[in-house]
Length: 318
Image (cartoon, helix red, strand yellow):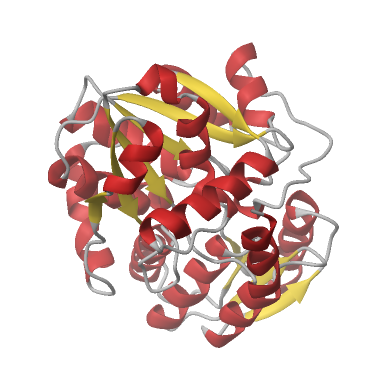
């Protein structure tokens, strides 16, 4: 588990590239949900997602520890890849990012714009990760995982900001991909706000972490077919699951329909753009609004990267 001192020591690497993001209480969300709602706006980073923090810390330490490294390679559905691309560019390290076939056009364009070489291969994230590992071995590059202590240390800085800037929270809802975000939240909750309950949110179409949480061990699934690509993971990380089992209060599964509704609610009530994973925490709160009535709740709006045609369709569906 990360300590407060570790995260505070990592923070300068993050703030060299971006300022802290805002957290606001939104009155229309409060009216909709029946509770006081504070939103942490990780859609307001240089890549439009919380992942940038982890990449900045990881590459900063990697550059110092291995100054002659020829390059890195990683797999992503988008936000992790943008993070590594941006951070690698700042560190002067070449980066190859592998994405699955049919990946977000706009996220792909952003990764290329940050300077990464993009490789499209595999039918989903897990298959793309296999291709990335093969490329790393073939070209003598370092494989950057999607879950690593330095990545968690970086993304934990948003939780540090949240717990220090918002009033005491009864509960905080956190979307789960491979788990860096919720692990960072749990670490900072333990350090700064022990009474706050942490709730993990997954897609009903990618329920591996919920199944694993219920079983107390890693339970992979055969598919992860959700439009919330930030949560489309088949195989949980064992290290992340260990932290979640110890520190999370419960898991909530939300459908694509519920996520799409939450995206519309964010637009209507806050005029914020939320991608699928970014809206998942609000979808979970809507599902549990009777349970949360009258309480003070935190939501992590983890990102706002969604292709325009899909977003227009989802807004219109409402």
